[in-house]
Structure formats: C-alpha cells, structure tokens
Image (cartoon, rainbow, N blue to C red; front, side):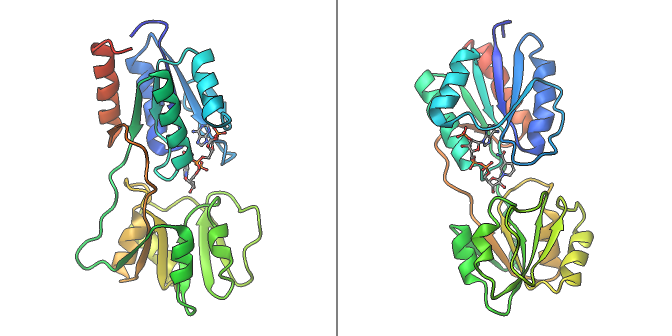
Length: 253
Ligand code: NAP
C-alpha cells in the first residue's frame, strides 16, 4: 500500500471499532477515515479521523470517494443498514473501487427453538397476538413500525430514546443489550414477556436475548435480513483484514 492509499471505513458496529485501529496499524502508510451515520449521539473514538452524517445518497458518496481519493471502501455497517450498503456497492462499482463488506453470519435456530421468520418489521408487528407482551429489540429507528399496535403491551429496549412517545402502557428501557443470558432472562421474566422480537444481527454482542428466550421457552419473532447486492464479503475482522491485505498484495489498487 502506498502513501496515497485512503481507506474509507463505513462504521456503526462493534467490529468497525476494532477494525479502525487494526487497519491503521496494519496499513500504517495509508489514511483511514471512519464514517458514522450519526444515529446515536454518543459516538466512540475510533482513533482515526472520523466524519459523521449521511453522504447524500450514491451521488454524494461518489463525490466523497473521488474528492478524498479513496482507494478502498470497507463496509462494516450493521447488517440492516441496507441503504448504506447498497449505496456503497453502487458507487464503488461505478468508480471501479474495491469494496469489502463485513457480513456477520446469521443466528440460526436450534432444534427446540420456537422461531417465526418475517420479511419485514410490519409483518412481525401484525402477527403479534392481542394478548402478547412483546420484548422489542428493534432499535430506535424502527420502533415506529410497531407503535401502531397500541392494543398490545410491549417492552422496548434501545440505546437512545425514540423521537415519538411510545403508546400508553408500553415500557421503555434505554440500555445496550446485556451480555449475559441470565440477566436477559431476568429482564424478560420481570416484565412478563411472552414474545421476543429481534433483528437477526448475528455476532455475540446481542445474542444473550436469544439464549434467554431459549431458556424461558419463549417464541422469537425473527425479522430476516434485508437483501444486499453481491459483494466481496468476510464474516469477521480477520477475514476483512486478510482480504484487504490480498488486495494490496495483488496490487489491485
Ligand atoms: P441505512 O438505512 O442503510 O442508512 C440510511 C442512511 O444513513 C444512508 O443512506 C446514509 O445516508 C446514512 N448512513 C448509514 N450508515 C452510514 C455511515 N456509516 N456513514 C455515513 N452515512 C451513513 O441504515 P440506518 O438508517 O443507519 O440503519 C438501518 C437499520 O440498521 C436500523 O435498524 C438500525 O438500528 C440498524 N443499525 C445501523 C447501524 C449503521 O451502521 N448504520 C448501526 C447499528 C444499527 P446518505 O444516503 O445520505 O449517505
């Protein structure tokens, strides 16, 4: 990699935090810039120059890539940040820039798990029975897709408060996912939860709620991942770093 190399890291996940440092260490001669959507206010310090906020669609991203002389894009956004991933794919294809997407493996049900799969949040919301007391671990941006179900009681957990108030009778916890399944099970028990509604985020950091549902034999409403365009993918940090290194070794950019 030469001095002119510039890696744009589309951040937003825990892995992106680790990647920023490792990219900077491994490709010491290159610039590494991290980018956040700016959905949460409390952004971590990644130890590399960081920009915050949308680029302005494919056109805005393409302008950024050209004007900043970006030579490699690494998409380490959340698996449900489909718009950003699609934009990155389209812009990189048009500019013939290499793109590596970090794509965590999905969670899969064990034989005794009671999972129902949904193609959209709205479908999952629709399917919750009237007597449900659902635990909604869907995030602040998507909670509105459930709030029309004012006829059921829900416990919503998210990192920062939603823009709109939740329906009467709903509970809100501002908290990151807990790391132990017994803590998660305790929370579900305390609130009399009957259904767990979640994205299939993959990875270990929010898996404890899935284990808790298993422990308590609760049904899980799993909102399946959005379709993303074909891309060079790696399931973890090691894989991304290896692909970045391979690109450099093959002098593809
Ligand atoms: P999205 O729908 O893919 O992104 C919407 C827009 O936000 C993008 O078109 C882009 O705006 C901007 N954006 C997203 N990620 C960006 C980044 N890293 N740097 C600069 N701009 C970025 O994704 P989302 O709205 O952020 O989230 C969708 C779902 O994923 C939600 O359920 C959310 O909870 C979950 N999620 C996302 C992230 C993430 O990494 N973005 C992290 C945790 C959870 P422009 O078109 O203007 O460029």
